[in-house]
Amino acid sequence: MSTLLLNTLTGKTSAGSIVVTGEGGSTTTNLQQGLVKAWVNLDGDSTASIVDNLNVGSLTDNGTGSFTITYTNNMGNTTYAVVVGIDEASNSGGTLTIGNVHTTSQLKLVSRNSSASVADENSLNAAILGDLA
Image (tube, rainbow, N blue to C red; front, side, top):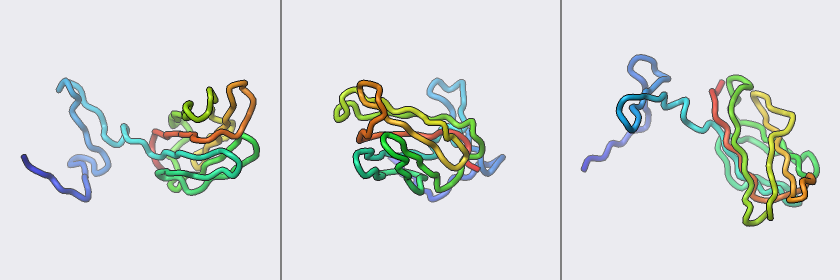
């Protein structure tokens, strides 16, 4: 078995583009397009706080159940995808949705309890996919 140790991968044709052959060998995907560009796990109870993250510079608690995350490195446009979730084991059926702020530098999240009322819930998660600026 061999081990390949690298610090940097650079595309041969285009420095920022690396093509990866799919499992079946007949299709390819662009490595950069498939990477999560930012993610956050936050505790929304009482005093909201970031538990862990990638590319998230700050968290603003806008009031009950409303949070704004600000990216460390901005997204290239506002058409990026966001996947959100809430740890149901600790939140008895709550939901997390994207709020009305969805810019290249920020994302608003809104948490609701099992009765669909805006509420502070813990263990909220978001993953952001798209192009960085």
